[in-house]
Length: 176
Image (cartoon, rainbow, N blue to C red; front, side):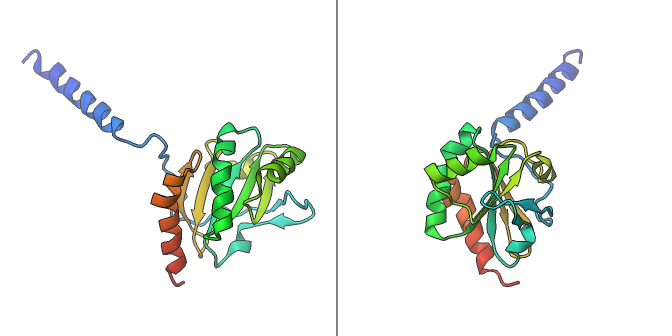
């Protein structure tokens, strides 16, 4: 009996640790899933006199990609986004996060611009509203403006083909 309680505690702790090993480390749950995308209005990178707001994408399925020039993983992800944009499968809106406008414009000129528009979040407040952990992050937004998926980290071809594109296709096929 003296060893029973420590043995039970050990088994319970070992069970929790073992179950954690089977989880995807890139999966970060978002409280925004199936809720309306947070509203904002920010100047665009191409023309600061113009602004972007998520309501401009109403009726469309779209991706919201948070990126920055100082982000190494964003550079890894960028060719995948450029190719996705070329395919025409889905519109991508960028959110340039805590960055310098000139550096961001040069980045897009040199590496290609996959975004239908890029909003500028100089102080990072919009990223906070979206539950942003670290660049890059990408959200799938449906026709009704609901957040349907959050991808943390760089998107790779496998992520596109196994998760994001099938979800986008299903959402685009849905009638409102």
